[in-house]
Length: 286
Length: 345
Image (cartoon, rainbow over all chains, first blue to last red; front, side, top):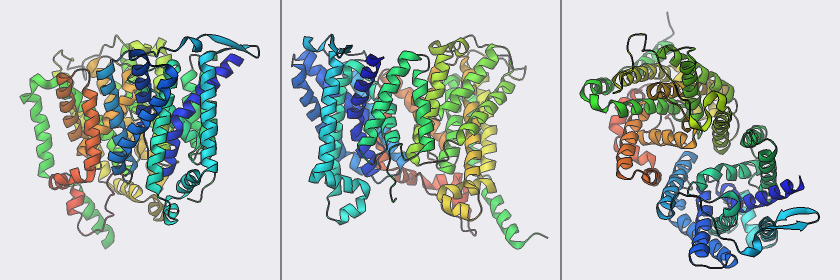
């Protein structure tokens, strides 16, 4: 029971790190980015190549995965995404689905279609007894890293000048622009960081979520659930939504394996009908 | 004696509904394909099915502006209903089974249509996607009925109308699909050119104003969503009947995305877009799949990205003259000032 809760929390935190970039993209620019999972996949495969083929230590590969995904994200944002921001949602959906298809086929071509495993260092394998329950060391690590990241993100958002600019831009881009905030610049940085976080999540999650070329398609719905259920107006909403989703998914697959996925989707539909702005959204003026 | 205004309006509606020579030529060409391209009937059948599916998506996307990423839900539901009806010999005559499948999908569409009335584009996107995923999960779990991941096998069909048995080269299947497509197209064309179709366009253009002039926005959306679901169900049933097989693949996200792509290639909001798009999409897919069997999705994705970057409006304007002729209301609506339908959105 407690082990399931623990696994669920680890899974949920992972989802949060993967999806929080998407929350900002959607909230700030009202841009439907279905290709977010592709950046996560990029991070996963970069770590895979570094660790398995070049023998780099796992912990050294993680920051590189973050940076590389962030750079890829920034390049795509500046060259391609900027042209699509002002277009209707249908165009955004088509554009990002196209990117997903391309990334799936490209990774399949380069890396093969089989499931990949990152070789973990010995110290991360096995279980450890913590307060009377057996927990996987790797999951403990994930909770640790993701927990620290969440706190750091929250502090950046709440305490720094960049954070207040970002919040202002999310609340009302036009007025923020009028006050002299460079909304596009803020957004480009946030997009890059969000992609980087997704890449880091992909690298960390390869062990738990699996890593194969269809990753962006398989987890697209999960990211979208986190964002739509959590709302895009704060970072706490998506965080709580990820935890609920993670615990619900793990518990659902354990207790009612036949209806696990079914429960998640049904809850999502009910929440969206009940509160289209998300469960934890603040009432906005718009 | 009718009011002058009413007479004026009905005259314009009749003008809009008039058949253009190009339209007649289009269907004559389709008819000719039965005789001239008899070796290509297998892929033509696939095209006809996709065309009907895209036509149904056009009804909700092009005529009422609902973005759906889960339209495969109704396609797959119709497909499974047709498969089960044939397998358990409940209705073995294809045409009756087709009608039953379409009605079943329409009922499902009616029930789920209330889910898409609320919220923004993103909410609708998620809800439609969620509905198709839930259905896929149900079909996956009820393997005693649907065959689960292995698909539904052992579908045997009686001859169409008791006269024409399906042959291995697919000639009967193609003619059958083409006739169904044509009949349902006629119905869709009639509806699109009716006052009801006009009111749909006004709902898409501006829901607030539409409700201000007394149009029940939600009622219109429910009606057109139900209709489109029925069309998609018929398309799915056609696929099952012509391939004598149905699997979870009919409910997948890729199928919803494919039909969206086909419709976007052809252009939304004038009914022929779905059919033209289906032809282009299938030919492209066939060509690419021959070229690179495993990686054709890459090129499909590239086409999508290019379409968006170039801009759908700009692409549509390249062949606007032809398009305007196929959609009579744009070029000859004349006197009555109609609200110009907003492209896409």
